[in-house]
Amino acid sequence: MRPNRFHNVIKIGPVQVGTHYDGLGRTKHTAVCTAPGCYFSADYNTRAAAELAARTHRCQPR
Image (cartoon, rainbow, N blue to C red; front, side):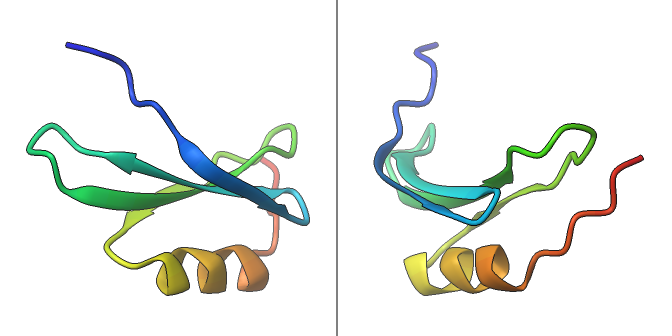
């Protein structure tokens, strides 16, 4: 299995939003927080949802 290849990556604060294709060839959008100790990441069906999650994310490091 090939690793995810992200394209159209942007950074909103500490959160990066990228687009990739899942195993079935569907387009998915992922939001991932890059702050140390924060393990937030989620997949979304729309780019708008991923960007909204990035804008409203508040880090809660563990």
